Amino acid sequence: MKRIVICMILLLVYTKSFSWGFYAHRRINTYAVFLLPPEMMVLYKPYIEFLGEHAVDPDKRRYAILEEGPRHYIDIDHYGKYPFDSLPRKWEEAVKQYSEDSVKKYGIVPWWIQTMLYGLTNAFKEKDQAKIVKLSAELGHYIADAHVPLHASSNHNGQLTGQHGIHGFWESRIPELLADKDWDFFIGKAGYISNPLHFTWQRVLESALAADSVLSIEKKLSNLFQADRKFSFESRNGIIVRQYSSAYTIAYNNMMNNMVERRMRQSIYAVASFWYTAWVNAGQPDLKNLSNKAFNDTELIEFEKLNALWKKGQHSQKICE
Image 1 (cartoon, one colour):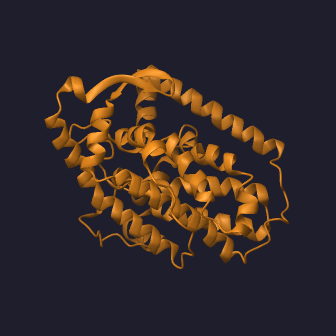
Image 2: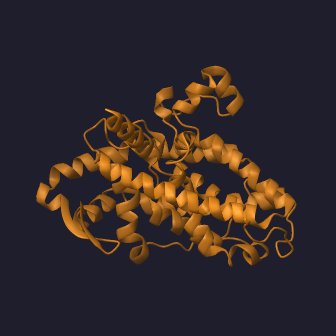
C-alpha cells in the first residue's frame, strides 16, 4: 500500500511538471545566447554550455520540491473560455479573487516568470556572476514552458481524450527528430520588453488557443494510420525504444503546419529578450567586471544533490511503471 501511494505521488508530480523535454530546453537556452548584444555575449558565450545544461534544472527539481510542479504550467481552461477574463492577470488580484491555494493548484507559470525576472534583475544589479548565469538558465526554462500549448490546458497529456503521451510527442519527439536537420533558428536580435507580464500572458493565451489543435489534429491523424505504422522501434539517444514512428511524427508536424518549430523559435526570442530586459532594467552593468565568478562549494553540492534526486526520481518512475 505504501509503495502504491509513493508511486501515485511521483506520477502526479511527473505528469504535471512535464515540459519541452531536455533536448529542446537545452537548445532553446543555447540558441538564445546568439540573440544577445555584444555587451552581454562577453558573459553568456563562455557560459553557453552551462546555460544549456542547467536549463533542465527546474524539471529535475520537481523530484525534490512539491511546490515546483505548478511553476511550469497553468490550467487556464479551469477559468472558463478564451480569453479567460475571469482570471486577473496580476498575482495579487488573482489571489484575492480565488485564494492562493486555488491559484497554485491550477498552475502559476505566468507569475513565476515575473518572480524569476525580478531575481535576475537583482543579480545584475549586484554584479553577481554565478547568480546571473544560474538564474538565466532557469528563467529560460519557465519561459519556454509557457510556449507549450498543453502547458495551458488541463488536458495536459491527453488523459481526458484517450491521447496519453501526446505531451511528450509534441514537445520531445518532434523536435528531437526534426530540429537539428530541418528547422531554422536564425531569428535576429533580442528586444527590450517594456511590459513583461503582458508579454507573458500573450504567450500563454497563444498556447491556450493552440491546445485544441494539438489534440484534435493528432486525433484525426491517428484515425488515418494503422497501429503498426503509428509506433515503431527506433533509436533514441543511442537506445532502441518503442516510440511514435518517424512517418507518424513527420505527418503530425506537417498537419500542424510546423507549430512546434514556430513555438520553439518564439521561445528562443523570448528567453533572450527577458535576459536582455533584466540587464537593461539593472542599468546595463559592465559584464566584464563582475564579482562571485565561481560557484562556491555549497552551490556545487546543490547541483550534485539535484542530479541525484532526479536520478532517484527517474528510478522510482520506472518502478511504478
